[in-house]
Amino acid sequence: MVTKAFADGLKDGAEWDLDGFDSIEQAANQDDGWDETTINAMGAVSCAKAWGVEVDTEAFSAACAEYNRGVVAAIRARMADEVQP
Picture (spheres, rainbow, N blue to C red):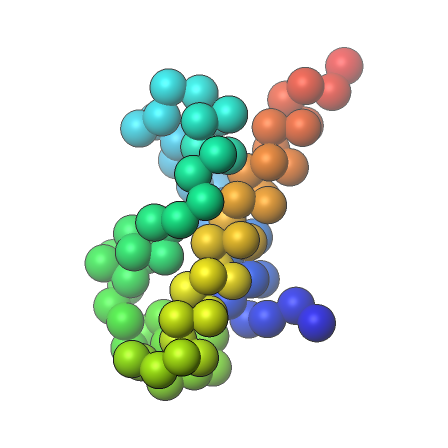
């Protein structure tokens, strides 16, 4: 089952501006912190609501991890697309 947080991570990761990284490979190898950037931009309450969880719960922590996984999956897909002939 794909969680709302993972799906949001996929969407955001497909659109993420990676200018702060030396390469797309470097971004693809950053497994965490994506959630923190999004939470700082949108607020924890907005993120929790979008992901269908409550702030400061185990479910919120799990959603953050799922979001990170989604972002990384999307960035790795972008990287694979760049390599395709």
